[in-house]
Each structure stands twice: as structure tokens, then as C-alpha cells.
Length: 167
Image (cartoon, rainbow, N blue to C red; front, side, top):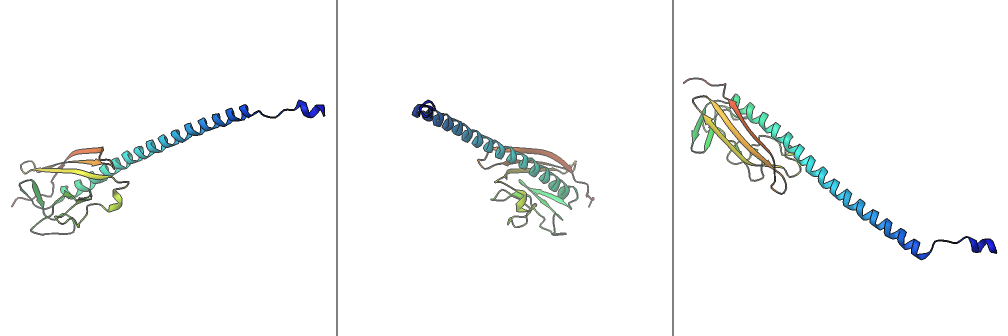
């Protein structure tokens, strides 16, 4: 009987202290995991925006470098032989659709890139294009934004129109 009295279990105070320590560790882990998930998503969104910027730069450069005739009216530039409409008198127009995708026509039906090129709520918010007919150089600038409309990437580049013929 004396052996049973010498072996004491945990007291209620020790048990409560252990539970409080475990709760504090669990709370710290939950905050840390939440922070790391937000940081990962932000990093992935910035990375995807850089990929989209590179893809758009290449696609726009390819279209403009080898396009047909170019004429400017006000703030719009009409470009002949862009995309699948070859030899059209009306030409094509680069602009940003309501969904934030770059399109090639007024109606917004002809996309420059597929919808999967704009992942995780990333979209193009602004697209400006200028054309200097003397030097035959397009100047293009666009901004890519994320879910909360924060700027993720901005591009500003020039393209030389090389498929040019004197009339």
C-alpha cells in the first residue's frame, strides 16, 4: 500500500498549465500558417503577373512588327492584317476588354491570348499604344493588376514596324 501512495499523478494545476501552453502553441501555429499562405499567394500572383507581362509583350510585338498598313485616328490605331483578318480595310484594334483581357477588335470577341493566360484574378488595367509614322515605331505600355486592383507589373516597350512598304 505504501508504494501506491508514493506514486502521485498530475495535479489539476499542472494539467491546466499544460493545456494553456498547448493552446498558445496552437494559436501561434495558426497565425503563422495563415501568414505563410497569404505570402505564398501574393508571391505566386506576382510571379504569374510577370509571366503574363512577358507573354503579352511577345504577342503584341509579333503582331505589330509584321502587321500591314497602319493609320491613326484620334487615340485609336487601326492595323491591317493583324490576326486572322487579312487584307481587311477596317483593320484591327488592340484594346482592353471589360474582363481585363487584351482583345483585337471593337466587339471584344477576338482575344490576343486565351482566358487561361490570365490566372488568379490577374488582368490588364491599362493599355496605351502610340505610333510614330516617321520612324515606324510603336510605343506600347500596359499595367497588370491583381484581385485588389494593386499593381503587380508594368511594361513599357517599343516595336519597330518592319513589314512596311511605300505606296
